[in-house]
Image (cartoon, rainbow over all chains, first blue to last red; front, side, top):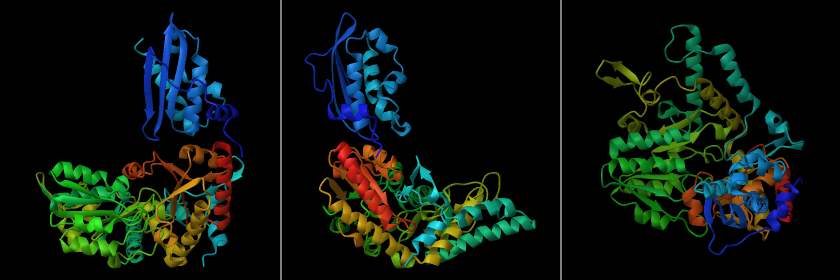
Length: 119
Length: 406
């Protein structure tokens, strides 16, 4: 069997930064109602940078793995840089995602954008 | 017994590969594949007979009309009906919208009740919701038993003198449950309600005689029974069809037109406004020929063998939950299930990488999934071209999915 990209399976089995922050500066939930995937992203911001991050959620392996990977990617990054991120930043980090599952991959990124939009 | 090897030779798509793997198509509940006889009939119509129907005075148009009406006669014979009771629509969804609109206009007033079930496909639910809102009528839902059968005791309670319509699926597209339509017809008719049956999952898979069903209106789609997309059927008792006002209006459905008013054509043409899906209807006629030549009893037996094998394999795996009746005889050819803690979309994507096509999602039955308390489910569905080997390959692949994601 040709499985999901190893990076997806690895993050699905060992999610990074999963849980909750106390008094987060950004706290946002995004969902795909059609498949029931839910991702919550919380950020602690200091000096315009992501000082700390957590995600939580439920759903398919791809959405949850993408959320886990995204938290690793954004930690320490300035918000102004994150605001400029297109889909391809996450897609290439995941290494080739099946086109039928783009919505799953992009769910955490949509959550992040929603959280940053007011800042 | 169906010679599945000979049948498969009629379906060109079954030879194709997906990423180098042999296609195993287990999603006939969504749409069936098409035999070359149907594909060729559609192409032949466009190459040799294409003209509009019921209008032209030239020979080509007469031939096209004969083919179109010939298809209607074949479909009528297939379900034990008279040709004038067979309305061609674009599919089950349009047929049910037609019924909800026209029956709603003729029979439903404020305060009346429309009885539906929680196992309905959205196509047999939303039109009734819209009608209820439009008329100030009340939608009355009927639940299911823990085994996934329709709760007939509750249904009997809910079908009261206020009920004008009972809308129910013949075979659930998720649970696979076969509902006892003749029994439900008795309950509905006892209080003078009209029984509307969504037969999209039954007519392709079971021998269905509309007279024996006892329903008043029955809808199904061509594309789930080897025919083209874009063609569906509404069967109705003649006197009821005559009573109902038209749904779509325009050309073909009229008798005489003045600037300010019009009179309607006779049934079934009253319900076929505009140029119908002619090639698709002819293709459906050939699909019906194909099914009839095999015999629907045999088609049912074949489906049942495959569903029973799948069901047995799924129930034997402790990481799998199966939805719907455990007895294969109580079901059509669909089996819905989940792998513990694994999202169905992941299951479908991983199976796809082995060339195995199943459906994952809510299958246009969100209220049912909410009741089962799951966001979505996997569904494998079988048809006359599937083999026992394909069922075994599917079960073995599930074990590999479980190893990766479980």
